[in-house]
Amino acid sequence: MTTRTVVDTPRRQRPDRERRAGTPRRWRQRLNRWDVKYSPYLYIAPFFVIFGLVGLFPLLYTAYVSVFDWEIGSTDPELVWLENYELLLADEQFWKTLVNTLSIFVLSSGPQIVIAIALAALLNARLRGPTGWRVGVLLPYAASLVAIGIIFANLFGPQYGLVNSVLEVVGLDRIDWQADRFASHLAIATMVNWRWTGYNALIVLAAMQAIPREVQEAAIVDGAGPFRRFVTVTLPMLRPTLIFVVITSTIGGLQIFTEPRLFDALPGSNGGSENQFQTMTMYMYQSAFENFDLGYAAAVAWILFLIVVLVALVNFLLTRRFVSSGEVDE
Image 1 (cartoon, rainbow, N blue to C red):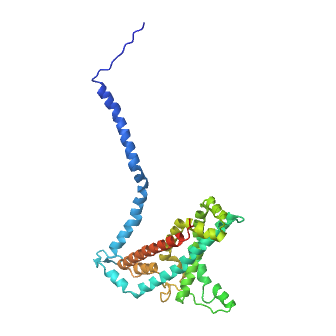
Image 2: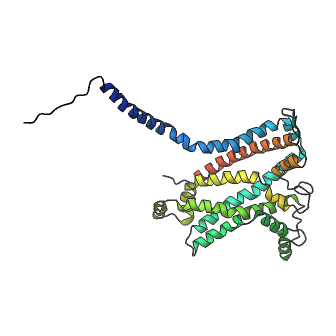
Image 3: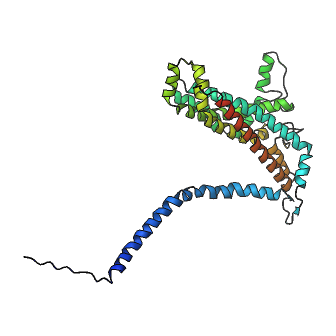
């Protein structure tokens, strides 16, 4: 027979041991709750911090500068409230640049989106060497913008340009692409479309290839032809991607600067001798760094920002309505 000796812990020591054992457990539980509750916000916080520094702060500071008569080098700018905006709305050159910007935007973004969708549909078909074709449409985007501007300025040259030579061959008159207002807009829009259509086509192509094959096969079983499937199946399922492409094209098209700047053949001029293809961003640059009026340039920037938001919202609603109209009837 064996005897077992039980060494009992003094009762006065148990609460201390349980307290010491329970404290880390409670801390772990509390940390787990904080982890579940706050970790997602910490993960996305760097984006908002960077956006606040490089996006929101310049936007608000531009609004602050726009209510001052602020010249470059001035240490004591005068507060003029909305006077810069009043002068801007009465400025004929501002309205001219606004019309130029909208004209180039319509001539570039509209055809660009349509051609990009058609090009993506072709690239989505069975082709030999599909990777080569897809890389090929992206080459204009990778080319130097300065080189593109110089090449297109020579192509649309009034005297020895290739485009005018082709027009003469088919029996048409030469066009002074730099001097004529609409012709200059058309030339600049051609330059923009040549550079950005392939880029947008690849984005749309990626969305097309993500469409489940079963959906297309079900449409084939229902007797839908290729065009019917494209309109009633493919386009509605591309709606989020098309909205993204349209909005980014709107933002880029209304802020166009480099292409018309490089298209100008006359040294020292800004958007043509009569500002016939000067855009709003070029006018903002001229106000800030040629006329040295930062307050006025900031007012131009804020009006342009409001126009971009308004046009992007309209395009968003139109794209959503247009694409959703082709949904398959149940």
